[in-house]
Image 1 (cartoon, rainbow, N blue to C red):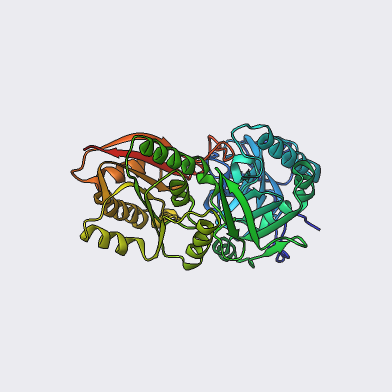
Image 2 (image 1 turned 90 degrees about the vertical axis):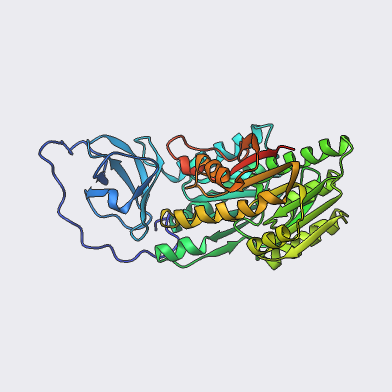
Length: 419
């Protein structure tokens, strides 16, 4: 049985005749192998980049990659229906075994435990390609591991390494789901698997605030722990303004379960207004506010674009505006449409900032670079004088591979508007 397959693999297609090139000696190649039609461009190999095979693999198989020059490039997991046909897991010539995966999981967990900037109880434990577990994200919430697989080939891998993660971390439960859009694109069935006794509601604390997150209704792993450092930064900004004797009003756009807004309220904001289109997320946000006895937070269920337009027409302004929308650029085909959305939402948000106030604008689109975001913000700001104070992203528990810039998906631009 192939541990790397989550669903039964279809019958293998007929194997082609073994490939032999006159100018490259393939006798010493690791079997089975694939030769690309061009150079190796990163840890993902798209279908169009696949060339000749020594033998046709099945979904979940490991295969050695060689570029068009005949140079060895690593071992990769294969999916016969995915547009990302191969996902590289190691550059070593040693074929990954079960023991290799367990060792990789152990070293990944120990890196988090040894990093003083990463909270042990709530953090990103495995960050996909950044930790050599392609298309697999695992977050830790106390004694529960919450995983999302963006390809079916990683479902079995996660289930295999869970005992090792439990042993290192002292965790007890896990919840695994496959991303529905990714599963549909690969022609696989979405899966949800949980350990016996796994809680449906996660309860944890971040930066002094108690939160709840629903595994049934939440997005991805239930809570966006990648914004942890930025949420703390908003709290520190509010606290510094309050210490200066300012009355601080905050607008949290696309607030989800209230992470930014509640940090601002706890830091002493006079008022916080949270807006989101997801009613279930807002219900959780309200509970989080009640748990922390934060009474100066208002929640509005509305489409961000139309509501920001209404606020502008009513001449409303705030000292701090946070814009943290969902992923507007999920694929290269949707780049222009997504860029337009980033432009429009920020164009509506800039007029809502008081003179001398702050706006923090975020993007979680991996295909939308920091340069793309700042150029879009420049156009959105129009005639207002805006200064970038800093540019931030996720914490150190979200490592990024140098050859995979898309892994730098989270970007936040902190700006101050002149008086």
